Length: 114
Ligand code: 5GP
Ligand code: ZN
Image 1 (tube, helix red, strand yellow):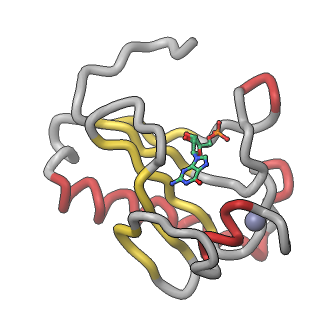
Image 2 (image 1 turned 120 degrees about the horizontal axis):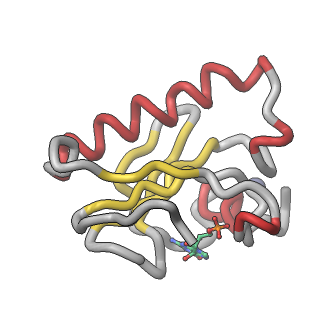
């Protein structure tokens, strides 16, 4: 996807504060953090949202969770707790249509979300 913001970050055409990268996923700091720790874990492949997920994506989607476990452990927030969320579609507030898992932590989080 030529003009997709997150595809451009994957291709290193745009800068990002990258925390982790492998062949399938990329993790970087959110540019507008809502908590002391706020990162985004994305598939390198352009998958617009959960709605477009297929069985072929299962390894990549599973990797996003194991990377979340690794990074939160390294950040030292795994035991206190954090939130991993994938906004899907307009009503959920998704504005970047390249799937991304928000990982938010470092403060007390309330539930339900707004
Ligand atoms: P959404 O609302 O689609 O779930 O979340 C999109 C997220 O991407 C927002 O939290 C926003 O701050 C973040 N974001 C938007 N543009 C950029 C960017 O250019 N770089 C980074 N690192 N994050 C971005
Ligand atoms: Zn994309």
